[in-house]
Image (cartoon, rainbow, N blue to C red; front, side, top):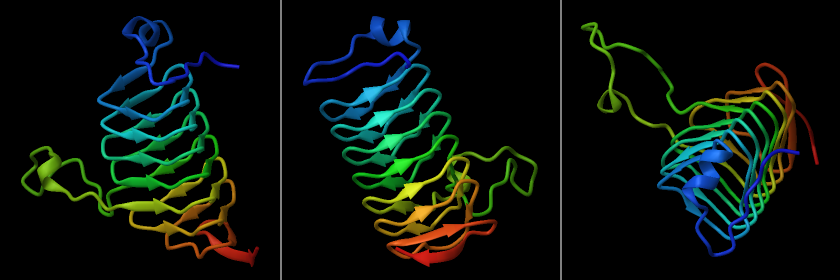
Amino acid sequence: MGFGCRRNNTMMTADYMRENFIRLTNVKLGNDVKIFAFVNAYGCHIDDGSKVGTFVEIQKNAFIGKNCKISSHTFICEGVVIEDYVFIGHGVMFINDAYPRAANADGSMQTEADWKVVPTRVRQGASIGSNATILAGVTIGEGAIVGAGAVVTKDVPPKTIVAGVPAKILREL
């Protein structure tokens, strides 16, 4: 079990967060959110009853709904919306740039002005297995299951199971 904290309409103290290596900057937290050690979250929203595991990063403008479980070592980037009752396994990676580059054609380093966030959505009740990679711009349908290690390159229909590289539909639920 990791270090944790609960919020019941009270603010977590900076000392508590420092002691447990939790960095929350401009994060909107719902009630009864549980956050484990070594979490870095900024400019995002984590709704009521959700749990965020160790070594998770949640970037600005990401949203996590009610009663979600975000397992350790997961990266949730800007533009990702995770609806209510979603399970995210260990080491899941979300991508928000369809054509990532470090530098512009002239050799200058890219800044936020040089690319556009491509939003991704995980619908209510979906489950994503460990080490899955979710590419930019996809929607994972309500109640869908993404198998461990899958690379999701296109939308996943509701109530289906997908797996593989690239992810393909295995069956309907």
